[in-house]
Amino acid sequence: MRTIPYLGGKSRYIEAINAGLRSLDPTNKRPLLDLFTGSGSVALSVATERDVVANDIQNYSRILVNGYSRRLAISPEDYWEAVQNEAAKYIADGRISRLIEWERAVFKQGDISNIVAMLSRGSKMAHDSSSVWAELGVNVGDDDGLRDLVMTRYYGGIYFSYEQAAWLDAAIAIARRMPRGQADVGLTLAMQFASSLVTSVGGHYAQPVQVLSKAGVPKDRVALKIAQQRAGFNPIGLLLMARKHVSGVSTDLPILGETADFREAIIRHGEDSLIYADPPYTREHYSRFYHVLETIAVGDEPGLSYSNLGGGSMPSKGLYRVQRHQSEFSIVSQAQAAFDDMFEMASRRNAKMLLSYSPTAGGETARPRSVVLPAVLGLAEKHYRKVDLLVIDGARHARLNRRDVSQVAPDGAEVLVFCAP
Image (cartoon, rainbow, N blue to C red; front, side, top):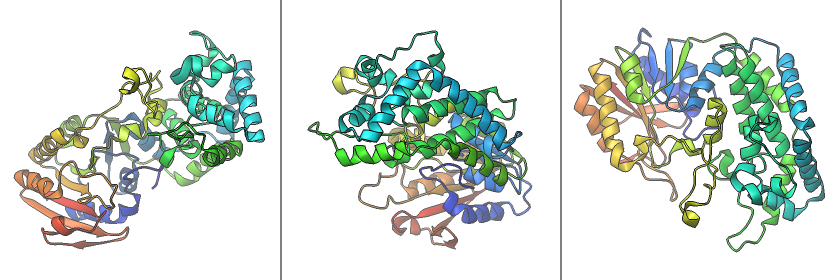
């Protein structure tokens, strides 16, 4: 199952991964510990055959897995009506309506200067006195109703239009009022909604679209394209997502979503288990690509981290959260020790392991691996009696290869490493 667009997602390789898990445990008696569950595609596909613990250090992963493994208890129409009523309350506020009326006029007129202002200075929390909010005289007090509109205050104008952000805040508010066990379904719909709306580089939250050149000249075509996308917003898309969720989740699945460090997860659930491990390959920290989804999942006031530019006085371009996880597997000086700990802790608990990895970067601009595949294999063999390697040829087929494939695997190849005690 493909939940949200996700970097490094394994939906293309589900068939090969499931076949690999079955070959390690043909009886299906071992529970699966999905150690770095990400978007949850592997955990959700395996849960039809065995019990699954889907773990990730990121809260949004736990929410996605729980949300896609449980049915929506109310009808999509009742859910939609609740969100619609909540959004209407927000938009009725004179300050929010002022922002929305302003942006609608800007979109209609194709007003480049104001489109650029919205996309570069749209965030109330990042730009404060220089923001569009300030120019329009829209103020937010510490104890008024707008404090709950986190998406609107932080990311409105930058990643979403103000109208889109208000609807997103409404969907989040309704999710948090749902009964226990259903809140994750509601938050999953909100995250899916956010992923469908965001206008950014790559469709994630690492980098907003830059509408000014280095020389400060507006990029007219880019600005107009984003304005056209946002002007076409129709909130009925959330209702369609809810209907699709109901039709796609036919029954509750035996999945336990958890948020923990990989070491803690192995201690809790690793004994005699089957572990699927898909850790980061490069120095890219996934948390920066999905920090907005993490804020939706956690439901906090995220704050803003600051860059080293301007003497540390400028918010990070992506408007990153203050608290943002930095994976050891993405830190070159720590990655090898993290792999060693993972293999050692799992083997000591008699756990079989299937590791996904990509040995070569593929393309001139791709990031180098934090740990090269031969080193990963050496660490696995240090703790496991039997280690085998499989190269996946595309999305549907796989072939067994000699050990030296780690030196000559095709660019961008995906490999599976089988580890048995």
